[in-house]
Length: 321
Ligand code: BG6
Image 1 (spheres, rainbow, N blue to C red):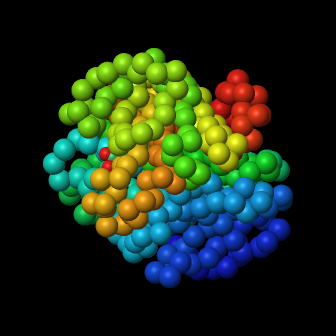
Image 2 (cartoon, helix red, strand yellow):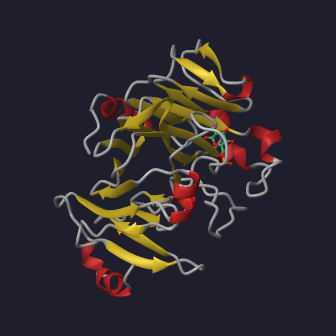
Image 3 (cartoon, rainbow, N blue to C red):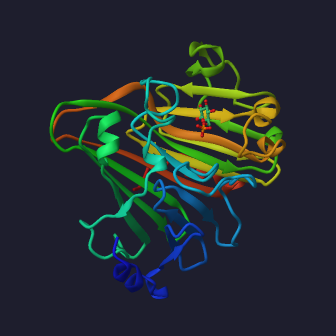
């Protein structure tokens, strides 16, 4: 990572700024003309903040989060690769895979950091390649390219491209582990997952079928909804705001809230914070993705925060990234 490149990028007109966190790790700040922003850390390629035009934070970060590499901080959007959840792989790999714990680099294939697809977005491109140590525990040569973009209207999009650079075929699972900030978990419901099958992490991954009209919360939930539609909405009744989650290449949705008892066992999470968060992850976990040498996989996520009255307008449109 060259400092010169960072210095050149702090041009306020570009909509991009590079700052350093207290560990000296670079964070790229994307800004929309109307005042929305997103912040992406080179630690983990993690999106650590996403704010709307009014400066309100839309992602949850725990007040007890530990901001110290190598572990990912509790909150934002974490890149879970090459294994996500307890599904797919076991053994010595780090929980949720190592990608979220590594230091990423700016992607040299996209020369200007303030790459602008078109005038409607500001984007940053990051890349992760395995280190010698990574290859010892997961012996596969990959390139993981991540583009994070903020649109003019403040929508956040993430595009992941994972390539098998050479060698043997490999398989992986993946998730955008997304901590949404909510007013009060008891006021929240998810639409789009009803009638689907899910694997329940709290019952040894047993398969059940969702029965309710919409998903609401009154106890711990840790589920993988399989083969889900590409648009899911999280409605926050109290805030009168909805998150519209659009995805592509990611068949599953992981829904997680630790609730009271589990919260107390997590050192980097406040005892009562389960009320203000909900993880809804676009993911590929039930069936591993396999790449032959030279093949590439793409997984897209687009998040919008809209007023609940306008939510249905957003549900009909496919992912636009
Ligand atoms: C969820 C998993 O996605 O992440 C849960 O389904 C897990 O089982 C949670 O507890 C948090 O994981 P971690 O490793 O970030 O503490």
